Image (cartoon, rainbow, N blue to C red):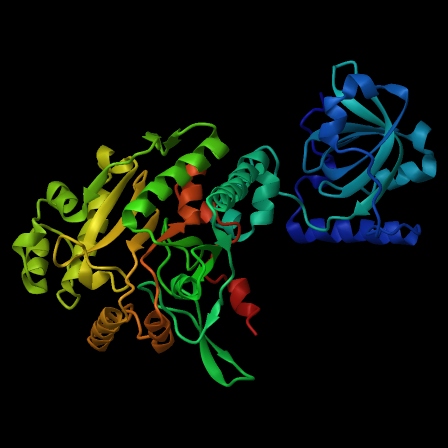
Length: 510
């Protein structure tokens, strides 16, 4: 077994000193006519493949070419050991002056931790039982100029890990990579599920002349050639509905949305959403599809419909409980919203019970704030899988009114492990009602609610052409990955999350 010893030239050097030493070695290689960044690489096997067939491949008659990054290096004078790793596994390699020759072996002295090498030779087992490649020929294929994070203690500073994810992936290896492998598998499973259910995937504009489909502030940019402001989309809803108007029955999109809002453990300004729309369906059909899809993803990714998130076991087996929103609020906050018919009385009651409440907000927004406060309490029942259903009309401007309960709409949100993971409706397809809702949203904007939606005449024109009864769903991909990967923060499942400025960022501003 290769000891966990780093060659002495890695020790007790400041980063500028270390970089200067590495630059000197780089120049020394070039002076010897060696290109430290060659164009081509030869590789006969991955390290994992060699290890899987080691007994079969072992012996001096074999010849295998591996590539990888040097993670450990020990110079013993006329011989040296190194540990290299590729994207599949790691293996010890053994350099010896008698095999390489004095001239080639001198370049081994110019290697550093983090360099990438191509090594060719035969496989053997050391006296201590370590599977090893005995190097007959090697070359450097990429010279690292900055030191790696210390391997055995990892990179622990959370902000550096998120800001410099490449260092996090190197230092914390399999643990971090597994999170993003899970992310990839979650998205693959989403696509497979929807494709198998007859949905078609489409791409809609990211730059939009109007933003809509959600309650949020947008990012604004300017198109120089057209001399007009455009918005980064906050949702894909209104464009996918246009496809339903055009005759497609089952459509979806997985893509980036952008909302100019705060950052916390479940919010990042740039995030990934799945949205789908199905003609001739309602929110009951959508609930069934959501619970089936999440259960399918869990089975594909975790191998079970029972998962653990932040210490709580969650049963994702369908069907999930359907709980009316106002009933849940009454049970968990003690406030019977129906007893407070206007925003002023509801705000006063919320404040009396210790909840934050802004009387300038509409009654529906206050109810939504109560819902969020309720979920934050994190009682065991609220950490399971369930749907909150039947929301206030005035915070659901794109949703069809409830078929039985006046003042409510046919809307639901799935909650998993205390995470709000989506939003779904029986979609509003009455163009006159939709215009009235948009106009009410514009009044709310005029009263100071800068997250209220804007009136979209082109979308209204599309609705007037005719949209069939439709069910629609939006799922937060990042939050679903948090659940499947058991990660507490959204930043830990986004490779490069949005971060605050550093001094270096300010110095590099254009």
